[in-house]
Image 1: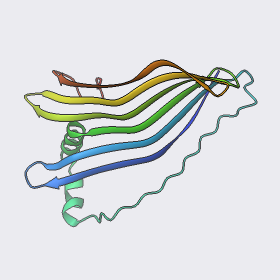
Image 2: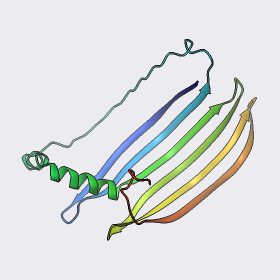
Image 3: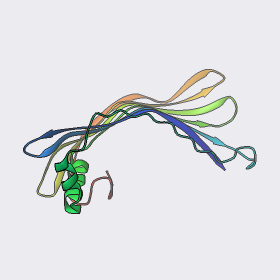
Image 4: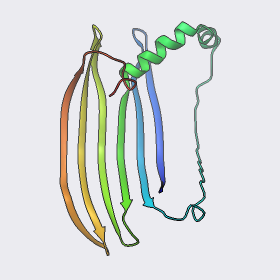
Length: 169
């Protein structure tokens, strides 16, 4: 079986308000993702354990107007869809390590990965996807053997149908 463990250093969800479209600049930023995948043979040696720690800080105080609007379910659906349509997803640092044995592992590392909405209209969604750096290597006995040299990538994507993040990116 596989034992998957890891951590996320920081998750930040932010947005801005304006008088025309109400919700703008919606960003979900994830920093410091570390995932380790190990093959384990003995089921009793590694019990299934999940732990999470979090801290949050907010200075948003609900208003009477917000409470009244929240009671209308159509309001919630409309704003949630607006958030999803305008969401910029940023993963600033991710590392996935597949441990082959005690001294060797395959590592995939990505930096500054971003999926951003450029515009939405007529049920079409224009997005920009960029990857500042993506690389893969094997580590063995403290030596590094490149499999995929670091490269960056940027593409504009037009979604013609479906719902964002539900029917694909």
